[in-house]
Length: 390
Image (cartoon, rainbow, N blue to C red; front, side, top):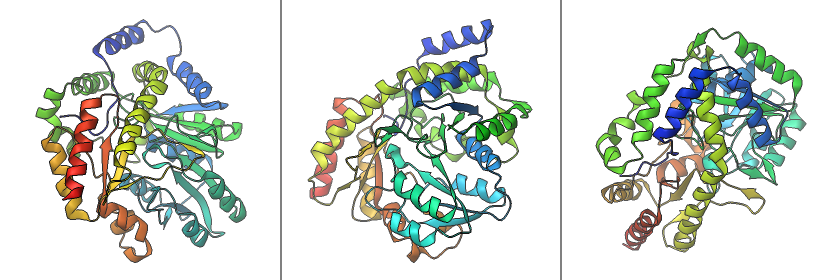
């Protein structure tokens, strides 16, 4: 069994990280921040406890307060919306394009008003959204744009790295992201004032994450590269109890030196990881793009996706669930990702979000990560073609 998303972390890398963190002698976190800035060609990077922490800090830096309105896609992670509500912000959902899975620009025009303080531009599955149109709309209404590039580090929009197209953006280094540090995130910006406010907040954080906890997670995460091990533990790994619970209280924790060392090693491999993801996605595209009853994600010519996952749509929910089970029986774990739209959680009118509803009912995401090999790709293609033809 192969997991739906993972990046390789070897036992050797973990051992080196332990040794380097024990030796100390230099500010590893500052060094990591400089490397993030260099990779993304931006002036400032600030590492945080998580991607959600990064967003939380940016909202504080921009001065958003209780009652302020934030626009976000109707199709994205529910825990982000809950964090914004916990902060007292007002959520305004916008529908998504059912072909790209990113913000629907026409719907954004309808929903953005002078009361909109911020727009959260999410690059879903590593596929950059239409940033120029989003920023034009925001400028007209006096809103700020924050790029949620948690799933997209290394992706490009019109030859510019995501996260740095708007004034500020953020990445995540969680277990299912382009690179991992067993948690963590980073803010990127060219605005010195915003960067200084973010650094001040992070300096005031008192709690420190546990290196022991990080090590346990690292060894466990590295172990599931072995398909036999993952076959045994995959249901536990994918369960809600295994996921890190993040509240406003533990957003105040600090990123650790050990995480920074792992993060740097991962960053040095990011382009290689993304090239492998793209190669796998190209194979799937070539072999599935003309299959009846299967719809692939649309990638515009001016966009360079990193294909964190390879989403496809089938006709309806029952078909999607049957296909997921069929692939799992062949040793391929796919994912439904977000089984409900965000408006569903907050009793909004589902008919206002037709694109998001359609995607949640019919989408399944295939693995493209660096552990996926030619044999896995052939299995996926053959099973999907056979299933679609029936």
